[in-house]
Image (cartoon, rainbow, N blue to C red):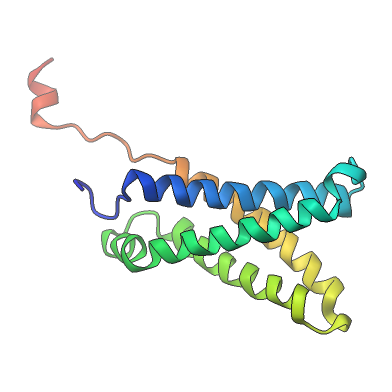
Amino acid sequence: MSRLGKMPSWQRSFVIGGMLACSSTGIAYLMGHEFQIQRAAFGSHSILAAHGIAAMFATLALGSVLPFHIKAGYKSKRKWLSGFSQLAFLLVLLASGALLNYGPEEIRDGVIKTHWIVGLLFFSIFLLHACSRLKPQNTSKDLSSN
């Protein structure tokens, strides 16, 4: 690996695929269940089950980046805001997902709202973090070729 914190291609694909699958199924269920858009298709139990399975893969993907990528990102002092906000949002999503399944009924409505708001925030920041590139730096080789 040539760059600090750069993931191998298999890991990058796993992380992006896991997070996109989890986010897209969550957004589909949100549209169908909460906003009544294509409720029969998007608000169904099979979409919710797919979201739960995708969340398991996304959690595995998160675990695969914890030992190296996060430590390297911290040391490099790049993308701190997007990286650590994603980590915080994922912790809230894991906790709220557990509360949705195992928590008391009295707090369920608040947890649902928290889960989908934080999920949308996470997805937005994830896209920015994953897709942003550093500005190419001028090197002496680049300058001498002009």
